Image (cartoon, rainbow, N blue to C red; front, side, top):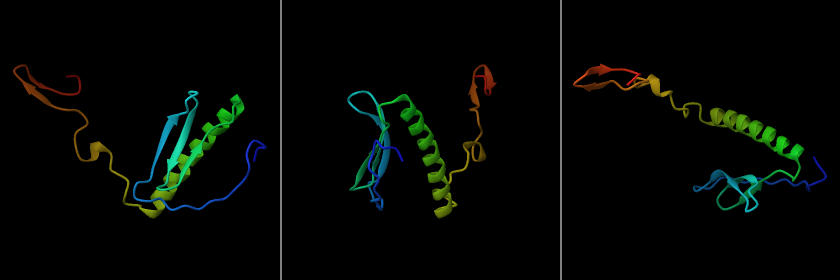
Length: 103
């Protein structure tokens, strides 16, 4: 924990309109906004280069752990890769004949 912020704990349940987005502050600094419906939370770096790297590391860890949670609570929710149900490249038929991936 850095001395930049005050520690607190909060527990929220996402509502039906919950979402998350990367956006920018008016200064141009990138932030992660978590809209929990109705609670909103903004995650941003302190104004130092080291803090920016720490935020990037945190976001990667957050994405990894969020993916693990989603897989645990909804193991069948992951979509199959597109090539499992459809060809990877379109077959175009025209007066010059059939074409594959290079069309």
